[in-house]
Length: 192
Image (cartoon, rainbow, N blue to C red; front, side, top):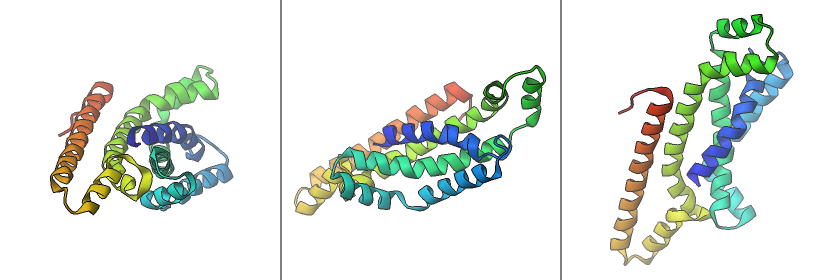
């Protein structure tokens, strides 16, 4: 749930952030509408989205993925748009000065500047969503969170509960390590 939801949110937020960024899209109404769209979908907590989608789709991973997708699209879109608005405009002007199209200006003058921020933020959200997926699962979205809640409900299988908690900790640690390796290879940063 965490991986798929974060991946789809990243893919949706990336182009929408260019529409929300004042420095890229000259239309103020479009900027305003995109920023309000990001505000609306991120203002509803992920757990509330999960309850809403569980009611609509039934139990399983789809409500969890949708909850992560909605919340992260809003949050990542906002962060991405702010990153785009804070770029050094000299690179855009340099690409524009050789007669490049608007798409090429964004591709070669904007994306290289914001890509490290985009990758870092998406990886951070993936790590965070890995932890959140347990809670989302407990409200009916499936996964280990639902199994943990069911096992705790019996009030007799505490060895299984301990095993699941250790498994969750291991998965979070593993995803954090994978995220750090990816971040180091892609953007050359070090993380603790």
